[in-house]
Length: 508
Ligand SMILES: Cc1ncc(COP(=O)(O)O)c(C=O)c1O
Image (cartoon, rainbow, N blue to C red):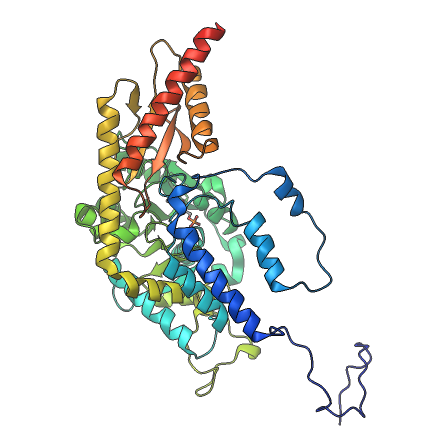
């Protein structure tokens, strides 16, 4: 008996045609040798591009004529790859975000590395989908996850998953927290099964990705309680205890505390040991957002503060930040692999697992997260760690800590500059000050200094507001920054500040 799909699919083929007649079209290069030559050129150009990065502006806006070229319609016809590459060179390559530059310190980025980029190229060449199946990429990711566990001193029985970044890693940790600490089957019943509100706690400095996570998890952002901070921007433990108590008395169900190991505004590390003790006493899930500081657990200056990472039920790490792996790569770790797996695993018939062949293996990475199709991002992690070794990464991070202290000291010595928060990691918040200026004028002045620094291509800090006061923020997750770069920054901030103040005086 035959089953025919021809009713639906109007495709015609000639049954008389000899299959050996001609070679059918593919997406492979028509001429492998000219593609090889182009590939070599690409590599040469990429090496020059990174070698000479310090000679170019830290950032420059995309010119209008370039933007105009990026509005063309979807091409129908093929183009010569060499011409496509020419267009890339002229319109795209010169205008990077800037985070490869030694004086880029905005938000919290990494620089990437050339070998990491090569690894991405090789990963795309193999084009292995690491969601399911038994192949070497799965084993490479398994090894990388073991390394991540070792980094935070997690037990071997813990599970992990490489993801696009810490936003996703945090979402995964919080999903496991929700399903594990609710007193009903959340997967089956959804949150309509809840008799009580499920509450999560984090400091007021927690990253905004957690708000997205609790909203997506159906918990609601009202139920992400923002705990006040102490003088050094850490979660205030007295406040945490009292907010949790109030929620319990109101009949709600506290389920999780999110601690941050390196807050995005100032780099503060929440009191991890105290939070771990509190969670253990109250039977709460202890999640650590280690996007910034988690990978520095082995750095001497931070070892003691970060040691309690291994007490967390789940940890989110980012490797594309302080470890400089090319975007995107973060890592979710969960101490109890059964809880992790039981939050995400689904086994439909088309993903049946076998004892042999490509579908062998009970444990697939798709059982530990949302995505089924997953890139081979583990390769750049594996190759980069082999290229540099953990000791070198730790030296780079320690140097950034020193640079932050150097910058903070220079700011403290200068009467026209004001340090805005204690420096506990690699983030320095400061502003230019001038006598007689009100808060609003200082904010406008520093905002303009920031824009000019960026637009002149000198340096790229970002801005933030701490306790109602706007300031410049220098996040030194940069393996290319040299001490002299910070002298240049402060010199330019003062030059621009003086200039803007004198212009203002002339207008008056
Ligand atoms: C503390 C913290 N958590 C989470 C994130 C989100 O990480 P990602 O951008 O990798 O998703 C960031 C980003 O800067 C962060 O600083």
